[in-house]
Picture 1 (spheres, one colour):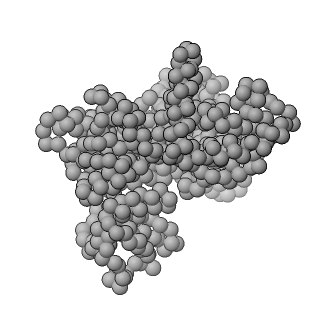
Picture 2 (cartoon, one colour):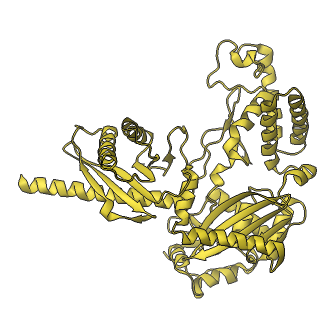
Picture 3 (cartoon, helix red, strand yellow):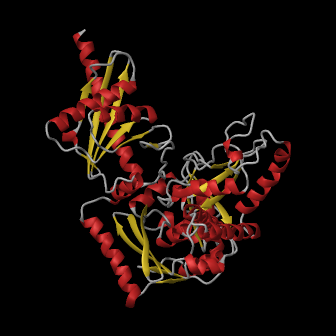
Length: 531
């Protein structure tokens, strides 16, 4: 049933609105200074195509009142992180932020907290975070485990193991006094993970240890402690002196809009030197704006005193107040018209324009970065197996060029060497046949090979490529949770549901599946006619 905005009792106060579809799923969360005016505008004003598609799905809207527009910013961001609606901005690097889990075992362990695509954490226990710099999260965990004598064994051994003899664990598995003290160690660990005074005490202790390690020329240990301190800093503790030393002076954001989508590039400047850059993209649906993006961004990044933007974000005053309240000091948003800052913004916009005119889709740039390919995968070949009983099994390959189907490059395969329903062996056969023929004839290999399936299918394809000494990047996309499996990585990569990079992989996979089903159906039809 479609939402009737004329009959709905919509409050005029500031707050947050949660749009739901016919199955009561939250599909979009927004904020407004006047809920009544903003909600009404969806149904009475002119909207772009993507926003119209959103409005068509609205069956109900729930409202949460706040005392101010600034409070609405905070609540909106928290609700987006909790529910992850399909139409809201979801930063492509959010999955890089690390959460830690203290298990609920008799003798708890400290683990990386894994999440499903729904955002729900896997496993029982207490969750802490987020910690930034997630790519080096194991350093943080290792230092914390050693500092608080937390066990690492999955099952308790009967006697003390090597960790005890190295001084990293007190062997609660064997020594009664250690078992008695273990709960206290976990309590101290959790006090640090919660942030606040205990975190600062621990940080001071670690700084002293880092100094001793440096003096004794144990530089590896000193760097390990330094990285742990940086990650603990993301718990929003009051570290004003540390902030002044390690925080960027200014952040710069440039934004361009193409075809109802926004591409944002950021540069981070530290002590007058550009130290970091990143790119993001999102659909211009409803209230997805530069302002919404910035607030989401600074929930997981330290906020500098000055945020420099290519254009003034909507509700600039409310956004500045929300960022100021979160940072605990003044934050200003500046959109320069001249001078050094203006030149920096122009540099960012030139970079965005260059990326666009080079003919590379932003989604491919994002995909290349996510998979660590060293460049955008402009040519992708995807393999799928279509089974219908033991007698009808075929392989299919789709091909994307610059993100678009290149149907002249599609290939179909009758399975020749495999009997029964062995998907792994079939994948190995079609991959081997494709690249023996292609590379043997002097053809050009694709930038990426995509396999429809999970770890097993990926392993079969990698085995076939290795047997031919073909060095082609290869990953797989599992249907159930849209997880990306990569060689040498035990954990799958989970891209945001709205990620353009994931959209490219889905498109290639769906095309291969469609092509394979059509071929399978054709063979069965021919068999029926000939029989």
